[in-house]
Every structure is written in structure tokens, then in C-alpha cells.
Length: 193
Image 1 (tube, one colour):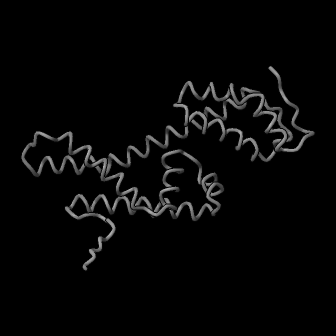
Image 2 (image 1 turned 90 degrees about the vertical axis):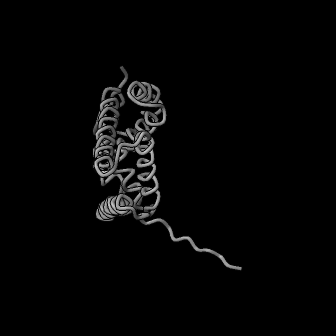
Image 3 (image 1 turned 45 degrees about the vertical axis):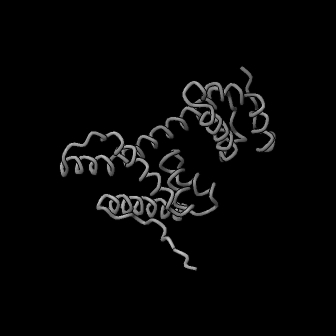
């Protein structure tokens, strides 16, 4: 197994050499655990993280080091996606149970579940782009606050605010829809001739 002495070259050149040597193997490893798009994202993120490593020039990077980075990225993504599902289930399932208790049994209960998932997607779509990006990166993809802040070009505090504001709006919209309201749907304007 070939290792590169990273002490003498500039950071970008080091990472580029590592990318050319190991990309296919790292991607193949990630692909064993994830679908192609996620595997490619995790592979690229591993090399970006390597580029950002504060002591890159001092390290002897091997394929096993890169595989461990990708393994950790995929594990964090999975943990965050499980957390997002828990958040969604925390709001949807109690409302479904409440509806079932309040009304007589209805034959199309499965359709109601899909309707509720659609409501979550609609509520997510009504968030600002910044709030959606923060939730997607932090909660869905498992990125760190620091990584999300660097990616979006803002401070960690701003990312934290966007995430909390987005979660709060989602909860409010879902609770409002659960009480029979329309949530925070955009106002419709009628035109008269």
C-alpha cells in the first residue's frame, strides 16, 4: 500500500494526488453502505475535510485513514437522518392517533398517513431557503455546525439560529394544520377585472 509523504508539498497538491490515487477505492467503500449519490458526496467530503485538516502537511495519509473518514461521515449522516425521522414522527404520529381517537374508524387510514407526510413536505417547502439549507445540512445530512457554516459562508451562530427557527416554524405549521388551520400557506390573491 502506497503512502504519500505530505510534509514537503502544498496542501492542494497533496489532496489532489491523494484524490487521484484513492478516489475510486474510497468511493467503492462508501458505495457498499450507501446509494451512489450519497457515496459520491461522502467521498468528496472526505477529501474536502482532508484539505481542511490543520496538520495535513505532517501526516502520512494511507487509504485506511481515508476509509475511516468516509465511515465516520456516513455514520453521522445516518444518525442525523434517524433523528429527523424521529422529529417528524413526534409531530405526525400523535396527531394521527388523536384523529383516530376523535373520529370513528375510517377505511382509508393509510391515505391519511401519506397526506400527513405531504403536509410535512409542504411545511418544509414554506421555510426560507436559509432555514431549509440549515435543516438539510445539520439534521438530514449530519453535517457539523462548523461545516454547514463554512459551506453557506456564515457564522455558526447564524446556522444555529436558522436551524432552530426552521424547526420552530415546522412545528408551528404542523400544529396549526392539525387544528384544522392551513398553516402558513402563502396568501392567495384574486384578480378582478
